[in-house]
Image (tube, rainbow, N blue to C red; front, side, top):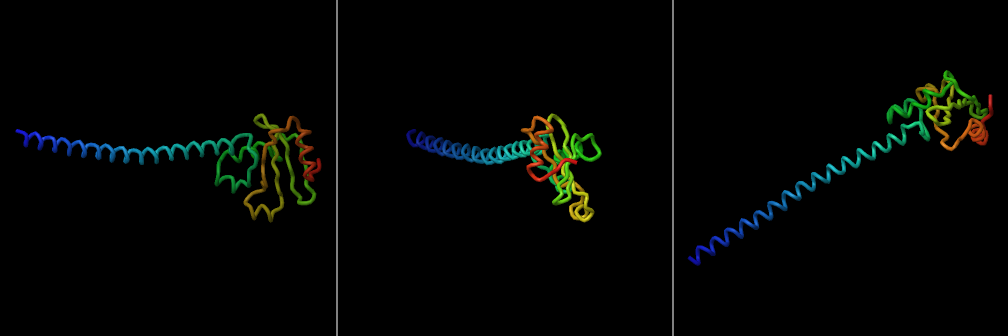
Length: 156
């Protein structure tokens, strides 16, 4: 009987070892999957944060429509709400480069859209928008005009 009890103990021990290895293997397989899942979730959150930061009314800089359309539809918001065809508050001109700036109050922020109406530049970039941005620190149109004036712009 002693030999059979030893045999049973060996079998139980072997099954226990196989079970431990199986549990470790399953854990490792799930941890890799969980790591990939957490990376995906992390990337999604980072992407969402970037989208909110770039696409909100507080947008700090937008590029040409052609460039912006490759990144985020929200980037176009400022230039579509503030341009020569909207109810802009002030119009400014940069005589050194011929660009026009339109200042508006949109979505709770003072915003600026800068345009270049030169046909050569429009052909090169695909549209007339140079940039659009919000002046988050501006409390009035005078704050924006003062900022733009300090950069070489004049009121039209």
